Image (cartoon, helix red, strand yellow):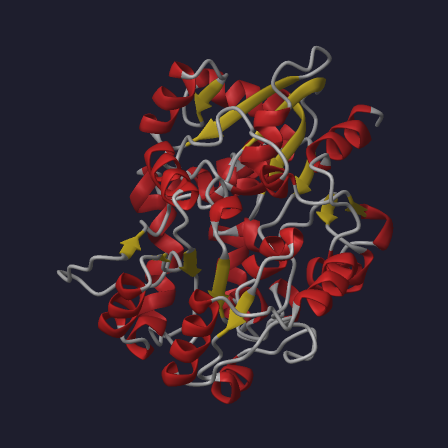
Length: 407
């Protein structure tokens, strides 16, 4: 990250929140004092993606804790529209800069998020911090990722981060995982002891087993209903969800969408595309059988309808295979990617599905699936599911609840 980008990165929170740098020392003092404010163990607060989203494990844990009489589950967000949507649906939510939101966070015993406590409010997060995270790792993350900003060797940059973005170096009290196979990696990445890693399963994966009230908030009920009807009519649904490249390379420059649209139209099927939050889609193109999803749309409510997933290095496949449906991997840049980003596992051994290293091969694999292949990876995927998911029952949120309720 060059000097100008780093400077912009540091000052972004102040520009967005209109916070003067001069009050930074006061905020650090507030952070210290927040740890000594008496906590209400029945008060559990939730937030996601810097306060800007209603998604991931925090969302699905929060939704499934509604109606629990021994706790009070509250969502905290920076989005006024989200405050309105959640309240209209009957959920308790506050803007994090409101007086009530500030007080709720300061008094909460348990704080659940998926990046850092800045998802809620870092300066008042004096309670027990539980990072639910956003995906079991294939690629190296946080402390183990050499490209992560927190691992910079530049002393000045580290000092500035500690002053202006201190949540970069935040330590959490607990995290969760889907299987013991990931615990060693998480302990290393997050710098926390093994006994602070809870094998509960991911609350967001509970959508594969049951309907969860409120799950279509920040998702699309209309899309779900459309896909469900089309699926009942016999149409196959294939999704392409590629991940972000540190190099900035756009995966959609490596697929021929016209050829895909022609193939899916011929087989009367549907192709769904969703870019990573930091990747853009081609603009202005019209297709008959391709549906483009917004980058920030929560796709989990529609995942149970997808017949086959195409991805590359995204951890979404680890969640998707819990239902043992086909996954095709499209690592067109594998050699280059491995030079930019280390993996925890051998790619070929930890990806239970066929590999396409160029678009022509990918198109042939898709065509085989649409024709009706005899799935050659079903048994291998089944073994992988058992390895990657200790629980496959839709009760992950309940296990998280039971653990913290008893603390």
